[in-house]
Length: 280
Image: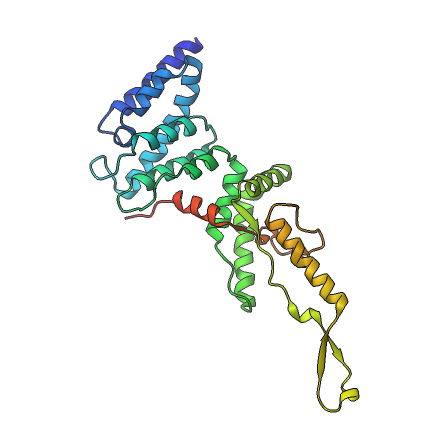
């Protein structure tokens, strides 16, 4: 029975790809047909089911953007081959949506996005919690510039509400693992507070030097300051975690801990490549 299901589902995806009236037929051409025929029956059932879900998301994206098979770009054969091989193994709906949006952006003639091997490799490694955290950070953007306290608090409040809606619904253990993997993939890093150099200085009593104030560097404060710098550099290089007592990691209970993280250039590039569609 399983073999029959595999053959049936495989036929559906082959027929979908062969249909030149569909977005999938234009984007992938013969790739799905060739790969679908090469997969074993059980693998075909699993991978074809995943691709059908991704193609359905891709079709919705194309419809939202007003794209048809006549006005979108077809993927080069090599890119299509890599995407199908990787995306067809993904069965999580959240990550499947990222694949669909990556494809929609890559085939949208108004979008300069190209399918990158790096993006394919990262998407292959993502779980649902990891995708949710990347979405959260990408949507939140950067906090207001230093000194805008009220706007910073508003940004943090919106970040916390968005985290409650999606990211924090995953168990704490899964969130912790997700953060570790995203750091391993160089998609996120800590967002440390600016270093305060004023803490290096100590005052000399005025009465000893007339009417002029003098300041000197306190060697104990300087030692602590440079230890913090070394801790940040080591953590940024992936040598260790940030120290548990780092000043910027000490948070009040009413402030979202997610504010301590930010996308790297690689992570931001991935999320731009997988950005949601905009209504035409």
